Figure 1 (tube, helix red, strand yellow):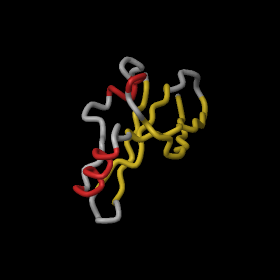
Figure 2: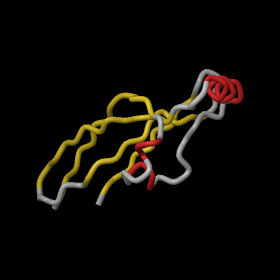
Figure 3: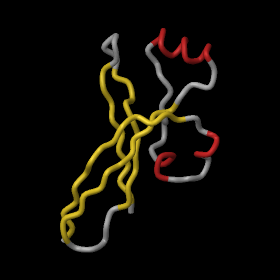
Figure 4: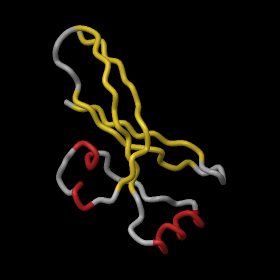
Length: 92
């Protein structure tokens, strides 16, 4: 099993935009586990698309969270690194 994280936040105009996506496998062993997840955000492919998305406030985002968890099709998706999230698991 995996946990998929989607982080949203306001942009300069006050619109809620995606700040990052990330996924991590849930540990099976009992105990406390800490994982650091590298976050990424989709990028527009052309300068015109970048300007249009900035101007309209609609930035590229994934409509299906399964895209983040699966590796299939990700090699053709342009993304930019966007920081890290640390998550802690308490497995019984």
